[in-house]
Each structure stands twice: as C-alpha cells, then as structure tokens.
Image (cartoon, rainbow, N blue to C red):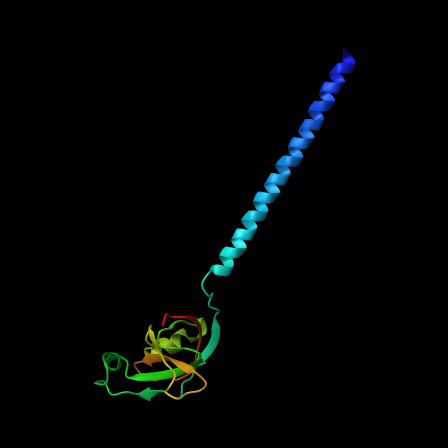
Length: 152
C-alpha cells in the first residue's frame, strides 16, 4: 500500500510540474503579445515633436504700422524665424528659457506666435515662426520650439 502512495504522490508532483510549465508558457505568450501590441501602438502614434533650441535675435525686427493688422496694433514689432519645412498649417509651441524671461517681458514679447508658409518660389521650403513684441528686444532671447505638423 505504501508503494501505491508514492506512485500517487509522484504522479501529483509530475502533474503539478506540467501545470506550472503550461502556466508559465501561457503567461510568457500573453506578455509577448502585450509587448508586441505596445510596440505597434508606439509606432502608430503621431509624429512626436522634438524640441529645438534656438535664439530670437535682438536685431532684424521689423516695425509694422499699427493699422496693418489687429496684431500690429498691440504688437507692432515682428521677427520671422526661419524653419525649413514649416507651413502655415503647422503649429509652433515655443517656450522661452528661464534666463531670457526678463528680456522677453521687457520687450512685451507676445505669448502667441504665427506660422507662415515659405515665400513663393522658395526652393528651400523654409517657412517662418513669426514672433511679435511691443518693442524689439534689447538682447537675444533663448527659447525652444516644437512643431506639430498640421493637416493640409
């Protein structure tokens, strides 16, 4: 009888080992499928914009007549910063660097900007981010921009 008990225990241990192996295989398959799905989702996300550090110079600003536009009435000075591939349908998010906040505030730099298409016939396809201010800055302004591609 005791020999029979060992056989049953041995069989139960073998079944437990098989069940463990099967369970681990199932978990590994689910984890692999989930990881693959996450990679696919990551690949399908819209273009992730990368930041570009740049400088808005103190020179090269243009003064526009206040009657030229509603924006010019409040912010008569503008500077067009060139960005290859930018179009008017794109969106530029800009953050002024901490070290330049005082300069940006002193000239009344607008918190908004405008994106402009490349000039007609421009083969470099360089568009512009237009910055506006109450006056031209007295020093360069360090900043970063991110471009979100617009829909044509």
